Amino acid sequence: MMLPLPTGEFQAYLFDCDGTIVDSMPQHYIAWRDTLDRWGCAFPEDLFYAWAGRPTADIVVALNEQHGLDMPVETVVAHRETRFQQLLPTAAGIPGVLRHIDDAHGRIPFAVVSGSTREAVTASLDALGILDRFDVLVCAGDYARPKPDPEPFLRAAELLGVPPRSCLVFEDADLGIEAATAAGMAAVRVPQPRRG
Image (cartoon, rainbow, N blue to C red; front, top):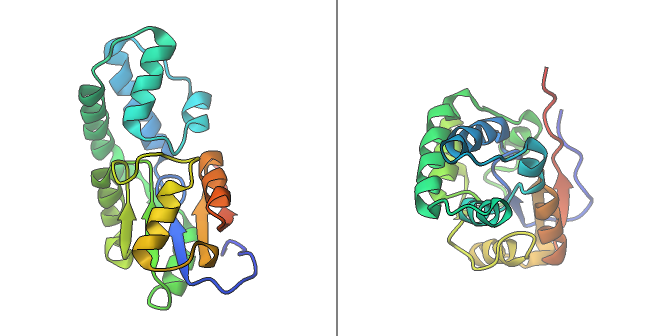
């Protein structure tokens, strides 16, 4: 089933990646859990979903502060990334979003706007065979202020040469919806896939 879209003439679609294009949030959580176990750091699943969209390094810094730990940020990020890559083949695309990508590809430009690393986003899109459909990738490290700040979405609009008001954002996370709204963009909330 196609996700219903708001009315309007949109000149670009901006997609979050994890939980929006790719049903990879469970794999991300397992990668976090397996990585943080090495440091004895708890990361409850509800907090993981509440922080969806935050860059990986920011999450490590926040967990250090929360638990009074001194986990090495770059090392934790690298371990988590490696574990996620191992789990990625078990992730699937989100059908309602993939249909919009298939339907609009070639008519309007697409961008991915993600809090994940470029390596993770590229691997996820490549695993689905759709990497070549995206004109722009805006990933962690490409902006100074992450979602819910509008900067990541505004950067994507600028790179596509499309006014923010003419962009439609596809997002699964609260932080992403906040960022899209702050950027003056319409947004479609992508529901979490049902787990059986």
